[in-house]
Image (cartoon, rainbow, N blue to C red):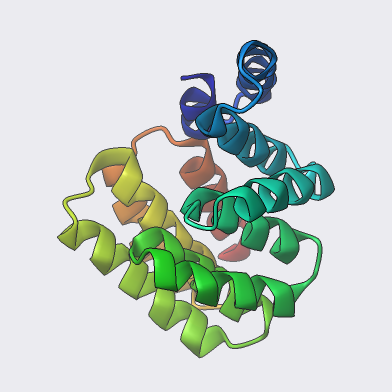
Length: 189
C-alpha cells in the first residue's frame, strides 16, 4: 500500500515506509518471492538501480517466470545506461507477458535511443492498449502523461498539451501532470 500511495502522490516517505515493511516481511520469510520482488521494484523506484538490478537478477535466476523481476532488470539497466541490456530484457519480457506497461517501456527506450517517431508511436499504442484493457483513472492518466512527455520532449507543444489535458481529466491533481503542464506553459511563454 505504501508503494501504491507513493506512486500516486510522489511522497518519497511512502517508499521508505514500503522498504521498511518489506524488510520486515523478508526477515520473517526470506524466500517469500512477492516481498522480494516488490523490494527490488521499490529500490528501482528510489533510484538504487544497482541494488534493484542485483536483487531482480537473483529473483529471475531462481524463477525465470518472474515477469516483474525481469521488468525491474530492464528498467534498472535502462537507468544505468545499458540500453542494449534493457532492450534484450524487454524483448525477453515480451515473451512472458504483453500489454501497455511493456509497450510504455519500449517507448521510453526508443526515446532514449533517439527514435522520437517510434517513441511517440509506442506511447500512443501503450495508451490505446491500456484503454482497451479497461484501465481508467490514474492508471490511464499515467499513459496520457507518458505520451504528453514524449511529445513535449520532441518539441510538439500542441500534442503535449492535448495529452496533458487528457491526463489531467483522467488523473486530477497528479503532481506529475501539474508539473508537466507547468513546464509546457513555461516552454510556450
